[in-house]
Structure formats: structure tokens, C-alpha cells
Amino acid sequence: MAVPESVPRPPADVGRYVSDVRRERYFAACDAVYALGATASAEQDVETSFGTTHVYRYDPADAAARDRTPVVLLHGAGSCSAMWYPNTRALSAVRPVYALDTPGDPGRSEQRAPIHQPEHAAQWLDETLAALGLDHVHLVGSSYGGWLALNQAHRKPERLASATLLDPGGLEKVGLRFFTWIFISLFATFAPRALRPRLAAWLDQPVLVVPELRAMVHASRSAFRIRRPAPLPLSDAELAGIRTPLYLVLGQRSLILHPQRQAERIPRLIPGARVEVVAGTGHGPQIDHAEKVNHLMLDFMESAGHDQPKTGERKS
Image (tube, rainbow, N blue to C red):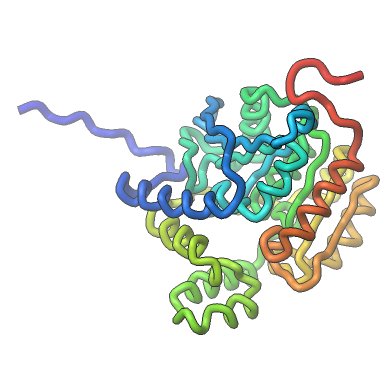
């Protein structure tokens, strides 16, 4: 009897699905969330040194807007690009939008090597943008994606027209209060339906009142294992070297950082940086106040400079 070949286990710091069945169940839940936002014009996979990155593209209906500097979206930890459903329609009405599934998180990307080291994260994103033919982009990141965007502005800013950070990691060490909120929020998803609106308001947690999001979170929890440490914050000296136009959008009740502290610190360290503290929200301002934050982001992108072509030579 032939002995079946053993399947090599992935490296300890590479995320993975626990089974094909649970992966497909999660994808079905994600597709229900994607359906709440704009319909993607196209999907594609691009190869990098760290694995395959899955990308959703959203094209403006206006042909002239398709030549504007595009927006690239980086989602938070434990999620995928479906989380941008409140934003894709408004953003793609004005500019092309590319939403990436970050390798190492549940999504349709396939990770082969870890990217949590700052230099590797910057290389992965630079390779992804290069493979998409993008040499000038407005980068937008939420939470862990905010750290990725901030890290890119520090380490490989050449392709960036601007960086918008939505309640990001990378500015302070993530404390116990944030992880406690994550745990309580997850526990609250099992609460009776009648209680969820009150819990959602108390926790600043829209997952509880959007059935499709709640289903996606549950499916993700059982399907995927994240294998990376939390990123370390950038130092004052590292932040002071950033020259990319930067926009920091924080929830007034953020638990990942101290909004007023960062509202004072970031403009002092980074010349020209803007900070907006959004009232009535915590860690998800782009979900809780989507219309307002979409407007703020687009206004900032307009102010960041003249548009450049998506590919090839830049305008003079």
C-alpha cells in the first residue's frame, strides 16, 4: 500500500483556515456583507513574495473619474475587505477603489510567508501595488490596516499620494482595555436579538445590529486562525520622519488609543498632518458615521495634491 505524502504544515506565524468547509462557509458570509456595498467591477489575484493577494476593484461610473489617483483600502485585523461596505459606493463614485484582503487575515488571499515584521509588511504592500500597476495612491487603513498604512508612509512612501488612518494601530501599545472590548463584543453577539441594539450602543459595536456582519464574525471565528503578534507602535523619531500627507480620523471613545493625546502629538511630530476626532463613536468611525467620514476622506484626498495617472508616467 502506498503511503500518502504528508502535507507540510504552514509556518507557525502564517494564518490558516481550519478546514475547506468552514472556509467556504465564511466566504458565503463575506459575500452577503459585500452585497451591502458597491458591486465590484472586477476581482483579481496578484502574486508577491509573501503569497497571493486578492483584490477587489470598484470603478467610477464617470469615465473621467477613472483616471484619478485611486484609493487603496486596508481592512482591520480578523476581517477582510468586506468591512468596507459602508464606504465603497461613496469613494468609488469619485475615484477608482482597490480593496485588498491582507494575507494573514481571513479573506481570499493566500499567505505563504509572514508579513508582521514592519519591513516585510512594507515590502508586501509595495509589491502588491506594483503588481496592480499603481504608482500613486491614496492609502486608507483601519485599525491594523491603519498600522500598515502608517508603516508604509514611514518605510516605503514612494507610491503614496496620502495616507488616511482610521482609529489605527501603530501609535500606542494596544492595552488590556481594547482586548477586553473585543472579548465582550464577541460575547455580546450571542445575546438575544432584543438586547443587541442597547449593547451595540454601549459597546460602539455595529456588528451587533447588522445581521450580515454578525454572521461574518461568527464564521470567521470558527474558520480561521490568525498567527501574528500585535504590531509595535512607531516611535516619535520614526513618526517625525514621515512626509506623506497624513490624515488621522479617531473615534472619540476609541479604546485602541487616547484620541486627545494623539490629536496633540501627531501634528506636532508630522508637518501638516490633520487629525479629526469623531464624536459618538469608538473604533469604527467609518462604519458608525459612514457618510460623514466618507466626505472627510474625500475632502482630504482632494487637498493632498494634484491627481496623477493610475499607471505609467505621472502628469507633469
